[in-house]
Image (cartoon, rainbow, N blue to C red; front, side, top):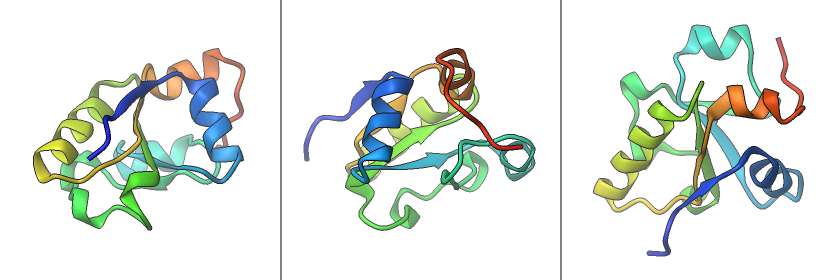
Length: 104
């Protein structure tokens, strides 16, 4: 299993834009519906199952609102032996602070 990473929003954006990663939003469905990163797939932490991640889990970057829940999901992936790229530090707040777009 390769090492997972803490990624900044710009790096996450680049990997997604190149088709090398998919963003998985671990916020609750209502939060995701209110504002999200275009193309992010919602897998709420409250029902999170690392084995149910989309496609090849190894191409997944986890994110949430500020980075706390995605770090918890990352820990769940590690414990389940599911390899992901990592999680986005600072979550959606850092994404927006970096000037990257969201969808409402």
